[in-house]
View 1: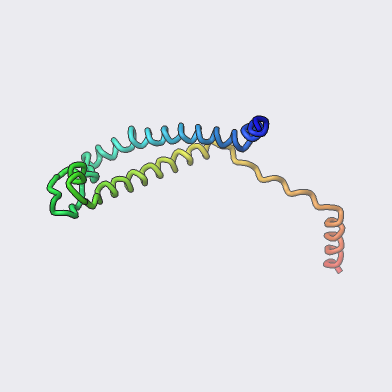
View 2: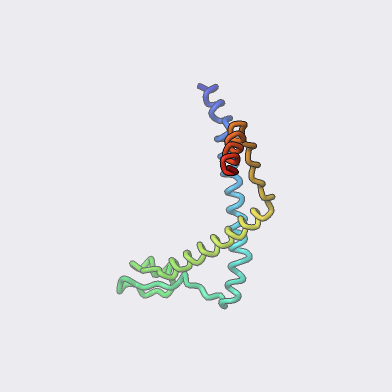
Length: 136
């Protein structure tokens, strides 16, 4: 059983998947840092630091708080500002990821398509027969 597990673990697919997970986690950290440390501060400076995450609609008369965290403790709230903030963050992260992948793809050399195989002897003979029939 140990030998079977060793064969399974050392197969190419499992090792490739493990490497992909580790690289993906590291790449995710880079993208999150790009968004949180570079893009979001720039957007905050342009918008004057406006933040939607504390905007909500109370669904209960018991809710009197002005901060979302406190309002959630008091009762049901419709946290539309938090939802909007998460959508904006998603769009920014998706666009940043698009730019990073596009930059990485531009570094790759374009692959030349494989050359078409030479026609077989039968195809050459058929082409000669066709050309001979056309010339008549």
